Length: 156
Image (tube, rainbow, N blue to C red; front, side, top):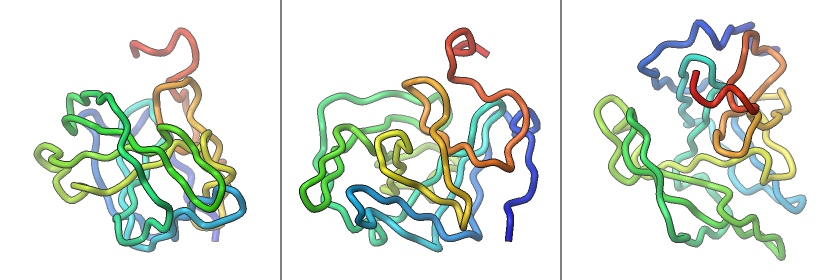
């Protein structure tokens, strides 16, 4: 079943957190890194949704890496190298140990940069990475509107 049409310009600000009905899947080196039916997504104006996997549904080995970032809505993010089989994707995932406010349900959940993986899926929909090198949204063909991340859109 195709995903419903959504316009990213109609997503809320501050962002919303919602459970995902579809199966989420991440593949690297021909192997499943993570697969869940218990995921969440964050929806924010002009962003492709970011998808979060419960740690119990992540099959890859994760190694913490130095550095962190701060989201005004979710708090402090930490980053992870993702390793499965002989493949290592550096700094390819992030998580929030103690997210703020309404984002507490994703404490410890993992999000993956689609561009660092071989393939990512929301249900049957294949994902392309959100433009730019910072944002980790997953773009699917049901999304409409202007998605930030490309040069010149950083401060929307």
